[in-house]
Length: 92
Image (tube, rainbow, N blue to C red):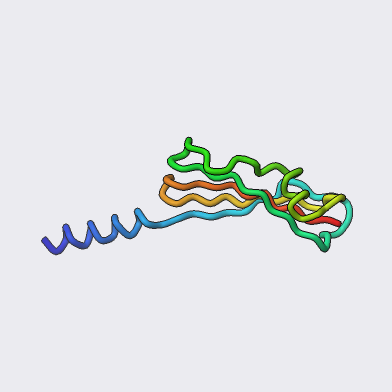
């Protein structure tokens, strides 16, 4: 019984883990800009869109950026129930 409880506790703990990662998408020849903009697309259960505009253009508009220096993306997932991709843009 104690082993079953221990296994169930570990399984429950693993079930509530989330994952987040960053990856570079693009970089220009200049340095990282002073302005910062973000745009996020999120989904529920992997197919129900909550928000859907995470383009570089939208992120640049959100940050008031005219010349893009770098573009990164941040991925987040919580048990596959909620997932989001955020595009992060820097520039001037």
